[in-house]
Length: 153
Image 1: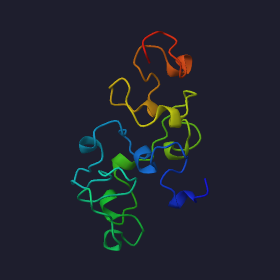
Image 2: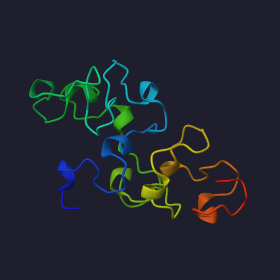
Image 3: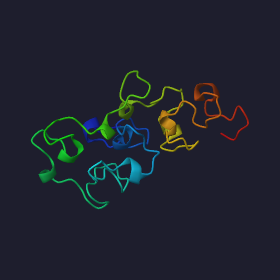
Image 4: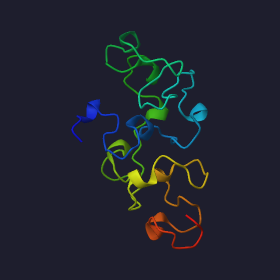
């Protein structure tokens, strides 16, 4: 797209916000379990792809950002430059780019834009990171996007 990645909420254009793709434990978990730090700081409860803060209507301000340019509450400690474990920039497939820049995060040949931010089989692994999204024992690389085994997925 025409946006510079540092200003783009979806750098790889797959329909999943970068903030969500940067969360280590996966966006398929409910927001109350997934997008709240140990200190109670909510990351994106209103699902707009931006940090929220302490409530769904909160937006980070310049007072929340330290001298290093990072919102203090998403660092392990202010000015550490180390992001909390929930924002670890995972690279699910271990190849190339981190998930937020990878159009096929799990390298199963199904684009993230097709798999979306859902958890088809309820295993708390979002489909864009799940190698067997329907948990039928047949890898998505073998099934693709079709229903080859007759199980409706």
